[in-house]
Image 1: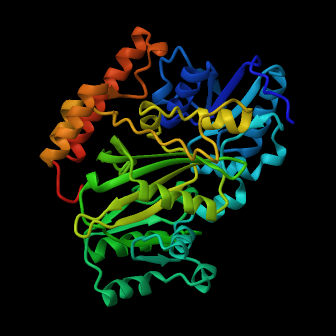
Image 2 (image 1 turned 90 degrees about the vertical axis):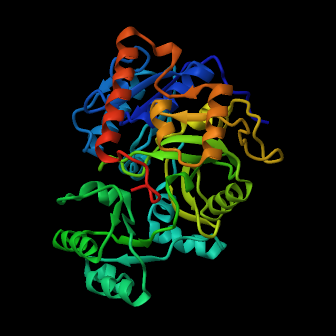
Image 3 (image 1 turned 45 degrees about the vertical axis):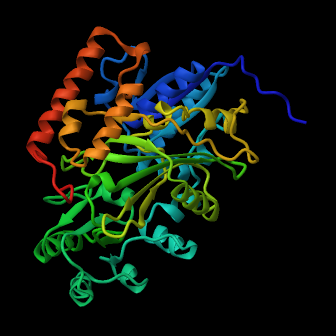
Length: 432
């Protein structure tokens, strides 16, 4: 028999980085359990600005793992009477924490994967191989390497990749993306995007030449385009506990993605839904990978065939995790149950929590979102969800609503609307 958890101890949850996904998790923990939210970053980020809820902890050396570890250990020693949760939504930081777990104060609870699991799932190449073993469909993908070791391991050279595109008769547009997001974070070249949409062979050659010049250390993927606009994209958010139980599975239909060069492809609006077959595929993948912590899957439903095509699994919760909380499954609960021993409705016998309420999550104004919904039936579903439950926006939190904060969030809406006018003024059948 184990001792009952000490629920009297205050809990601090410290987010590293400070993107909107970190804020959403901090909000969830505060809303559900009263956890004390803090964030560590080099500067006060856009989504934390004017927050009266989240305390900012400045750390000017955010690119130095030893400095971050030292700061975290000092923080832990200064808070001996608190339970401590450490959180991030950046691939680089997930890996850094995994690499340095043995150097961190053992009191830090971390709802993220270990290093072996990170390497098994974060590479889109190894992700596709595991999916193939499980019978999960992924796009036709060419792995391009830029070092002798990568080519020796089976990657195509840039020249061979272009020849293979021609030989296979792959049609443009094609998608280009990094196999490992952490390496992509480190490289820079003219015209670099989060995801490249190649309209011609010349565009493919240009990016591959830039990467070859920089001896890019991991693989770059050239991938078939699965037909359909961004409303055919889907998102899954999951949590697998340290006991090997998948305790959270939630999904949603993407309605609109962001279109600025640095955020291209990130969902800006999601309508929650339950695709049970897709959720089961995600669960099977997590079990096969022996993965623990938060995970975020991206897949697409082909407009031509209706089949599901899985693109990747991110070893973190994802920027848009508030859609899960808004639908009734607070994302802090699986962490509280797994790492702090607090009660949860999700057990091995009952199966994972999967919220059934259909809600509209959006970081863009509803009027702007409506302009990009071309399917009348989908538009009617979205409108009905808004009427029933309002519009779920992670930054609009009643416990963090100073006048400056409210005005700042409103200004972010205006700024985002301007970006759509600049980068994606009219909806298209492909989403770009």
